[in-house]
Amino acid sequence: MSSTIVDAHAGEHAHRGGVGAFISKYVFSRDHKIIGLQFLFSTLLWFLVGGLLALGIRIQLAWPWEGMPVIGPMLFAGEGGQISPEFYTTLFTMHATVMIFFVIIPILAGAFGNYLIPLMIGADDMAFPTLNMLSYWFMWPAFALIGMSFFFPPYGAGGGWTSYPPLSAVWEAAPGSHWPQTLWLLGVTCVGISSMLGSVNYMTTIIQMRAPGMTMFRLPMTIWAMFITAILQAFALPVLTAAGFMQLLDRVAGTGFFVPEGLVVNNSIAASGGGQPLLWQHLFWFYSHPAVYIMILPAMGMVSDIISCFSRKPLFGYKPMVFSISGIAGLGFIVWGHHMFVSGMNPILGMTFMVATMMIALPSAVKVFNWLGTIWGGRLYFTTPMLFSLSFVSMFIIGGLSGIFMAATPVDIFIHDTYFIVAHFHYVLFTGTAMAVFGAIYFWFPKMFGRMMNEQLGKLHFFLTFVFMNGTFYLMHILGARGFPRRLADPYDYETFSNLQPMNQFITICAIGMVASQIIFAGNFIYSMFWGPTVGRNPWRANGLEWTAPSPPGHGNFDFQPIVYRGPYEYGSPEVDTDYYPQTQPPPDGIEPTGKSEHTDH
Image 1 (cartoon, rainbow, N blue to C red):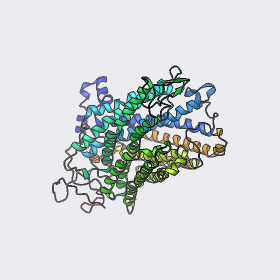
Image 2: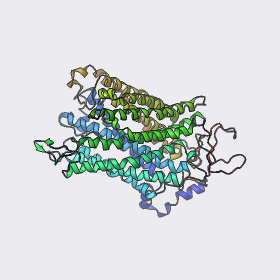
Image 3: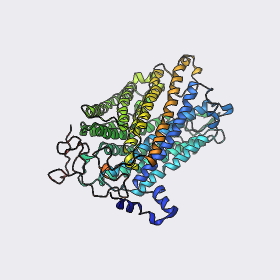
Image 4: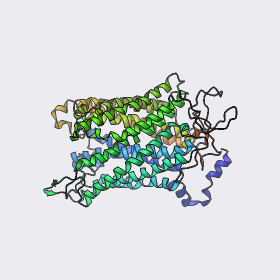
């Protein structure tokens, strides 16, 4: 795009002038790119909060009641600068809540989904721009409500991120103590509304607004992953939302959806009773197991695009990748019961969930071997995005293999609620998904800001993060195998676990190093936004439609009508002299697109 066109687009709002123009363009914006950046900045700030909460947990475990003389007063945590066991429960509740609902889900579906979907399918914006704006601003009531719940006396919300009743469903007798959990439930409901608005928008945009020639099997894997994630959200979220309202009614209106008959709290009947606590677990995990894939499928899609680009090879097995990601999503709806193996379910039902869970390993293995097939024989460029993406693949393998242990009912009965579970889901969601997110930020940063992040600092950030995160989470498998329980505030309460303290302390030191390493990322990100070297449209020599738009894209994204002639992974094509073949480049013979996919599985 010429500077004249860019200036014209940039000036579309400038004529209004003043604060109003700034607010309409950058605050209450309906431009998908601005909304994506709003999600990105918000989630990165909450990522910092979640990391600090994690350090509070780890310091307490490494040096019980001794490591909090500074952290305690900062967190309003009791007398003498020490936290209480109840406040420790609040710490891990809020850490998980922030990381899941305020970081992983919104940064994948909110930030990258918003920014990339129209650009990668050749659209000028989302199908419903106003709905898109509301999907972001519905997050702010959630930020406020859950943030306030943390500071309400006496301890804040402490039901865990799963909010299991009856612990979370009764109206506590202490003055004001009912508010934290009630605010927490309201906040999670707002997050659900935000995700629902986004999912409707994403599905409609991808189905209806693709550029000419962009068939479904010419979509990049990022878009396929976002599309299937949106379907998951649309079908699973209503269940959690309904369950949240029922638990709210239990708390504020005395209903008995989840509160059992005759439950006594503080020497009095807590509610009318007659409810089923296990009903909440079924409803919660019917959403929250698909939510695991909401938190990882977009990462799989983005990693597929990055690995293909820096291997300079077509993605191995494009259609099997699409079908496997669909299979993972479908199976994700029928395995929620493996979270409840210790709840006393019928063994036949437990075996059904066990077999269905193990079947998810099949489409997951397809993806892993296809990534390896893409790398094999490629001309690899070990850029920062590529290093993070390769890390995702290797860490996802470890997380997936540890998950197979929990799929087996007899094994899960032993390791359930031990640190083996903590190790597993952190390997999937941090060493996996978070590494993919870092890779995606480094990869699409030039498109978002028109500047390049520093590669040397990026590789240093990768190396330190990779070393410290494995030092943090891998040893948790050993703790769990020894039976070390989750949610335990003081390991010295049990003589059996006191000899594990050196390992706990090593984990905590690595966790401090991992959080400190993110200072490098923050400095690189902020500096590069303003002073990084400027780039053109396609600094990575990639094939996707987004790389044919200006960097950063102006209003309407494209300065031409994109027409798609091929799939997104035509690297090393014999039809052109270069090692990449953009989707919008006409074929040498000038044949117009037929609308049929010309992609060949390699």
